[in-house]
Length: 119
Image: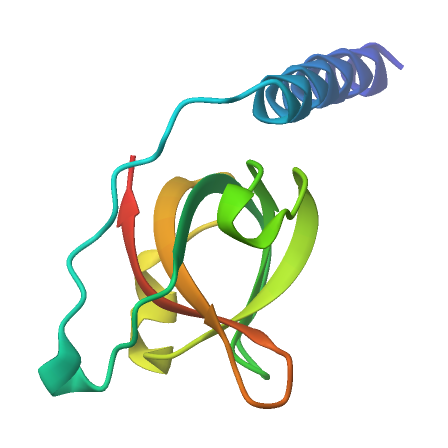
């Protein structure tokens, strides 16, 4: 019983921290510095934002990211799935990592992360 209470208390604290981060993203108005776009690697000019990885699906090469607003797209803060252009870089990431990332919208409408940096 004591162990369950400790686990419940820890989870509550973690969820409270996540809720605060969502609120911080919703209120964020600071311009986020762009990442370097390497056209030799087939990268396109995209949109830059920051966020926290909430899920990783290596089977399909997707990340779920709770992200800050993206003014260039008039995209509010939220949680969305993003493909990852370089699937090998999935190994660098874990759930809970804060990242700054450059993404584009593919021809099929999917958002694809071209590059990222851990913050």
